[in-house]
Each structure stands twice: as C-alpha cells, then as structure tokens.
Length: 235
Image 1: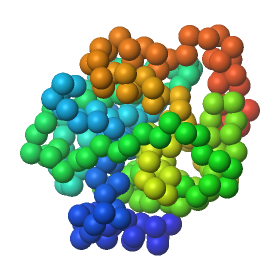
Image 2: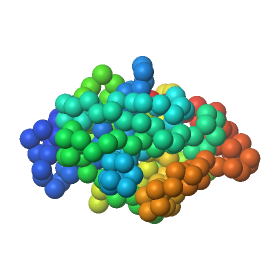
Image 3: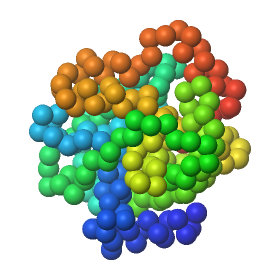
Image 4: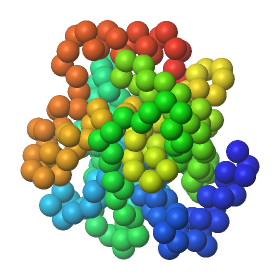
C-alpha cells in the first residue's frame, strides 16, 4: 500500500498533466457529516448544473443533502440529487456541483458498458480516511456474483464510492466495500448504471434517475442476501 500511495501522490501533484495520470482528475474526496468516501466525475455541463459525480448511497447516509467534495486543496459544495434507499439495490448516489474556479481542473471519466472478464487487470482509486491525496491499488477481476463484482484490490477505509478502472482507464464500477476479514473487494458494476446516467446526461430529466433503483422484489432479496452472506463491510 505504501508504494501505491507514493505513486499516486507524485501523480496528483507533480504529474497531474501527464496523460498517464489524467484519471486522477476525475476523482474527489467526499465528506458527509462524519462519513468520508470517494466520488467520481462522469460528466460536466452547464445543462446539468456543472459537474456530475457518482458515489455510494451509504457514503451520504442514503439522504438527499449537501456534501463537501475536496480536490486539489479546495473544498467544493455539492448537492445530492438522487440516492438509493437503504437495503434496496444498488447503493448509488448522484451529486452535482456548480462550475467554479475550484472545479475547472476536474474532468469526467468515460463509463464502460462492458463487464470485465475474470482475471482482467484493473485498479481502484480512493481517498483513505483522514487523507487528502488519492491512492491507487492494483488487482484483478476475481468473479461476478449476482450483481456485484469481486476483485483482488486491497482497498482501505475511505474508498467507498470510488472508481474501479480498466487498464485503459474506463470506469468499470464503484467500490461498495470489502470482506470484514481478508482483501476481497466488492464493486458495483458500471453495467448497472451506465444506461441511466447517459439518459440523464442527455435529457437532464431527474425522474430518469429513479431507474437506478431496482423495482424487482427478487433482485432486492438477492442483493441483501449477498450483503449478509459475504458480510460486506462498507468502507
């Protein structure tokens, strides 16, 4: 982990204009009350009010509320415009910020519409709790459960809501937690939300975001069974 941290610190400060590290310009720290997590920028446009970010619903306590995003030493006001209810798939929240001088360096990532294959190289990015520089952790795709991916990335507290990227830097999903014991890392796949987010970006119709929540009772049962069976610990 120390080596990963050093790589990312250099990238985020001295090498932020290097194409190799541009993905870091999409990632921000999020603070919501006592909660700390990570969020990822997926779009920027005046039509949606500025920058559009995704994170996990549990990071914002499953509530529509104001949050603080931190990037490049700046505190940025954000507003949750959509959030899943607790215990309902899929643990996702949508945040917008206004265009300000503090957000000009933040760029959106590209969301993948493909599910990664077992053994595929991937990496996770997040802001560890009480730290203000992002860390990058490398690993491989482990397996696909019902609607959750598992990877070998050894993430830390504060990574929740943060991005998981393919080697070509496309967003494969969001970190939702890890095993209570061990290093297995759980990820909400981008295939769950890419279509809805793209529709919202095109239409700016907030009602479309309701499609981010499953209306199927069976999916809800399976989702919660996975959370309990694998003892997923939100981080």
